[in-house]
Amino acid sequence: MEEEQSLAEIADFLERIAGNIRQGNMILSDDCKLDLPRNVILNIDVDRRTKPDVTATSVEIQLKWKE
Image 1 (cartoon, helix red, strand yellow):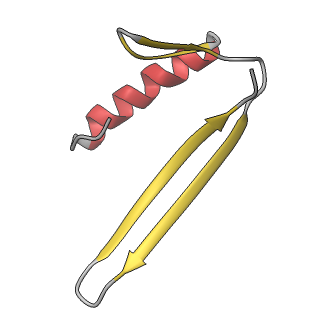
Image 2 (tube, rainbow, N blue to C red):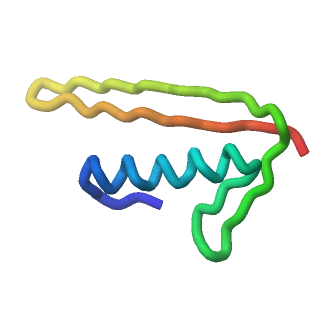
């Protein structure tokens, strides 16, 4: 999923995900629900690429677990 949204829309989305994680699952869409184990690995990656006229920055938040 990739689309431009306002900071408020993104915060609302992340708050819904956080609430679901507290319940032990992630609901990303009507057809994508993931049940989570009690403990997962959290990985946060920041990537900054600078060119002469622009800097592009991305932040990736990744949850990993074994089934």
